[in-house]
Structures are given as structure tokens and as C-alpha cells.
Image 1 (spheres, rainbow, N blue to C red):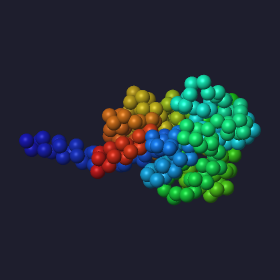
Image 2 (cartoon, protein in one colour):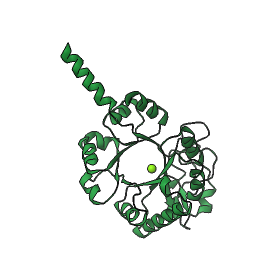
Image 3 (cartoon, rainbow, N blue to C red):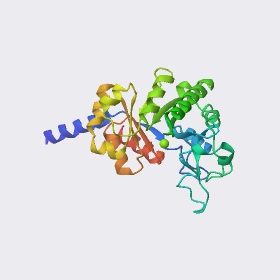
Image 4 (cartoon, helix red, strand yellow):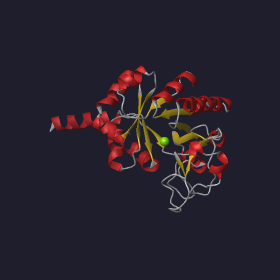
Length: 266
Ligand code: MG
């Protein structure tokens, strides 16, 4: 009996020692009336919830405007309003062309500037900016440079973090963003040692990748790298990532994620 109690207490101690992961709303908090993915409203709702972060995707249009949209096509494939709607290649369309097609909630496709205006309104919620892959490295360097400059111009260096699938985008972010800016790699193919060697701050990998290689979480922590995981919406999966001690959870269900974190990381 004594042994059982000891084991139970040890288990409780190890669970209670878990740090609370930070919740990041995937493409903003969109699962609510009047909101939709990558809309200004989705960022507002994430701010209203007081979340650690609100993620968004950015692309450079053909005429050089940075827009918030998942891409490559606008509207997004998750768009529900009609099957026959014309969809535009974001990076090969002008801002005017894109503006003509509203988002699901009726908003106009947001520019990064409009997003930063909204970001400024809250001191709590950070913007996790995913810089999408572009057609050429030169375009990727251009969007990185211009994004970093715009964030600095708005005085928001401490309110943004970056993520990207392309190693080149990460390399350019590392070169151009202020020292200490969080930059995490998304593509799931590099081991922690390699990401550490790229001088990034962490990994941001798909749930399936970490599920197959849970030892990468500890390896990252030993190297001083952070671990973010996407896109975890299901209760069982959320419980697993919380118990594994990840640092960030990117989710379409920030309400459930927040509730489970409170419950598990007491
Ligand atoms: Mg994204």
C-alpha cells in the first residue's frame, strides 16, 4: 500500500511540475461567429481571449503588397461559400484583384500593415507570423526584409515571432530580424541538432512528427530550443502534447487547449 501511495505521489509531482504550454490560435481564433481564418476579426478574438499568440500566414502579391492569407490560392480551399468561385494565385495576383474577393466573414483580405495596426491594440497577444514559401529565393528574401522592416517601424519587435517551412526563409529571418527574435522551423524533417546548427530558436512540427519522435522534445530542450506543435485540436492529442512538455501548442481550438492546460498543469 505504501509503495502504491509513493508511486501515486511521485506521478502527481511529475505532472504538477509541467510548465504550462503557450496557446497559439492557428490562423487566429476563427471558430466563432463572425470570424474566419486569417481575418482581422480572428486576431481580435485571440486578443480578447488573452491568448499567448495568434498565428497568421503572409504572402507577397505580384505588386509587392504583403497580405495575410494562407495561400497559394485566394480564397482558401476551406472557403465554404461556393464551389465555382474563381480562385487566384496570391503571389501572381495584384492586391486590387485579391481585394475583389471577400473573406468568408465578409472582410477584405487583410494586409500585414492592417494586421500590425490591430496587433498594437493589445500588449498581451503576440503575432506568430508564418512567412509562406515563394516562387524564388529572391522573393522570399524580399518578403522577409520588408516584414522585418515593417514590424520595426510599428515598434512591435517584441510582439512578433516567426515560423517558416523553407530553410532559406528561416536563414534570411535569422540574418535580418533583431537578435533574440524567436524563429522556428516548420517542415519536420530536420532533427533538433540540425535546427540548433541553423541558429534558430526552435522547432514547430506537426503532431504526427512529434508522435513518431517524442525524444526530439527532450533533445530540443537540452539544446535550449523551444518546441511548438501544430495543429492539435483533438482532446486526446492535446493531452498527449501537454504531458510531453511542449512549449507551445498551435490549435484551432484554443478554448479546449486552455481548459486542458489548466486541468493538467496545476
Ligand atoms: Mg500557417
